[in-house]
Length: 278
Ligand code: NAP
Image 1 (cartoon, rainbow, N blue to C red):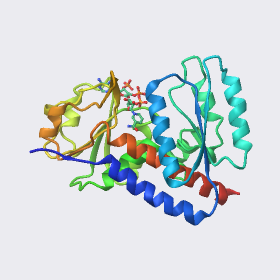
Image 2 (cartoon, rainbow, N blue to C red):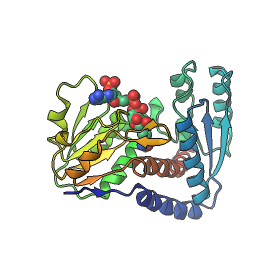
Image 3 (spheres, protein in one colour):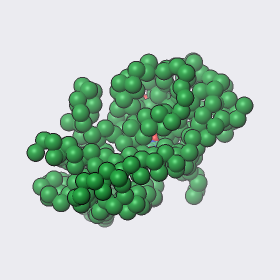
Image 4 (cartoon, rainbow, N blue to C red):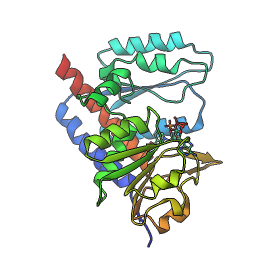
């Protein structure tokens, strides 16, 4: 059996087409501010995709690139400025930041209604309580992908427990009536969990970690992991998994594109939420 490839580009296109219609109907200018304080080449590539998608749907954007001398305090001041700026709809801090910067402090400084990534305590807390909020883009992207796949049983295993991916995704899946197991690097016998699930979502950044004998025949496999080898991108899933899985997201061309499209959609959600609360 050869797994059916889930086309992230196609799903991203659907999200962006819908976003464009919504934006046209709003008859207002939406602006995304992207803050970049890192020399990470992957971050530059992600920013390029976000800009491209913003252009495609008509969201204005401004990228603020800092050099390595920038202080946490300076970034906090800038965020405060954009929080107060009526023309700024959403703010994204491109992660990871340089190590010396206070990432948590910087994320927390974003006005929750402008928090396009949905990573402030306010938004994550609301997500965990089931209250309307800006949902983290990667987790929402995974849900969008699952909506495109026929799943027989709603059992899911997530290999990741980070605040960026695993924890928000666990809640979104629970809200969709999935029975969820969360695994991590200290899980003993990872394959015991992975091979018994109908939906496997992996986000470790360990290329080839998920092998054929760890996957149930016909399972939906969502590969969120990204690692770079030279110019090539790789996911967590070994090529041999294509022989057993039913559906699989490729890397590149899978979750990454859907995440970026979902993020653009979140700019609209920021606008709508702030109007509601005004
Ligand atoms: P992270 O904070 O480092 O989390 C990695 C997770 O993987 C942790 O929970 C870790 O367990 C677990 N893990 C690592 N090695 C493992 C192993 N051998 N067995 C089982 N679990 C293992 O990273 P992150 O920010 O969540 O990102 C994870 C990956 O997703 C990265 O490759 C990142 O580039 C990618 N990503 C992709 C997108 C996208 O749109 N495609 C978006 C966000 C992130 P512990 O908690 O025990 O350390």
